[in-house]
Image (cartoon, helix red, strand yellow):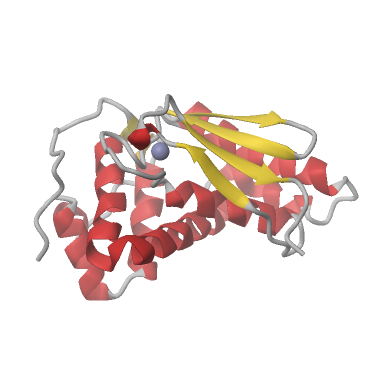
Length: 215
Ligand SMILES: [Zn+2]
């Protein structure tokens, strides 16, 4: 058993709705081996959720500290590379799960079939996700568009909440963005880089997305 996270402050006073915390735990449970999932919950001091998940409602009660500890736990249990890979995978699965569970994301599935330009689909898909977080949680998120790329901004990021690191660590959001783009583009993949991270001392977490797909 690994020792627990260094930062055990009880609350960030920032929250995801229960429904999102529930979704996060469900995708982690599906992504990890059963024993590893138990170890992750134990590391994150969240073993209470092993038997019963957060309620399926929009009450803002799933603390950002929980999310940061889950992210930290992935790297502790699987090492930095494994933690990165699983964080990205969990982000992708979270988006897939959210398409049916979070009503405001439902339109993303339809975008691929529309005759809009690829860039419009990318922008509309990411804007829908950003709006979901801003409107329903304490994570303020927005999109900024340039000629060659899009920047996805996250202020008050739960993934790295209270953490310090040498390099950006918010892999979950990278995976989430990748999956949105994959869906709206009929299966194409795009380069997504985390440019800045609160954990390395930046003001916010920013992700840069190339508008041209990877060949
Ligand atoms: Zn972050």
